[in-house]
Length: 269
Image 1 (cartoon, rainbow, N blue to C red):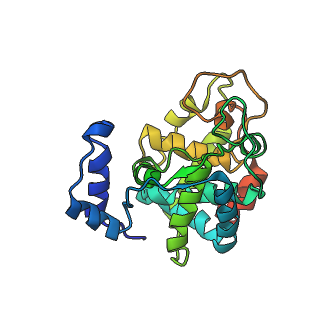
Image 2 (image 1 turned 135 degrees about the vertical axis):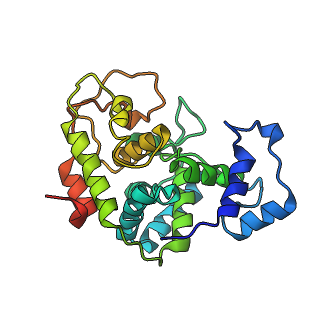
């Protein structure tokens, strides 16, 4: 298993969370704790440097050529029984990153700070990356498995993080593989046609160790992998689910071809 420094993780969590999000003006960290967490790779310098959209696109295009996709698959599976949540979103970040063609920022009329091509072609929020966000992105990775999965800035951040461990060998256990197949089996058998992913999530709680938020993020990842696919577009709902996952309903099952193409020998047939 990839070892996480418990002290550094606690420092990261204590900066952002105490029975809920800590207000920005109350976030405090002493120099020794920060330097320790930074040395262990869990926190980053607070800087106002910004990487613009067009540069992110170029860097992501380079990163996807360096990272072994099968290793992100194994990392994802290894996260299931261990609850090592920081390993979970690499697979969707690489999958989405591989889809993105190099292009320049095209203004989105509804959301001027986001790229229209990213939105229309890839279901991605094409933003810039304020490097100060690295700390909150990492907190969200370790706390829930990632949150802003579809943000261009998060995809870049996530791939940079995986690059650091790309040579690490991940070995899913039989428990990991069984959990994943049990999740797919439950999705396939869930036929309550009016129910969204929010209802499906509740039926997964006995399959693997997880909180509600962790299960939703896992379903979001499967959605961005084009595995958890809606059979049709539904009416927009005011929901915290991504636009992609929002349309899924019970009875839609999952895309078995895509699941097999991605997870290959780990799928029970």
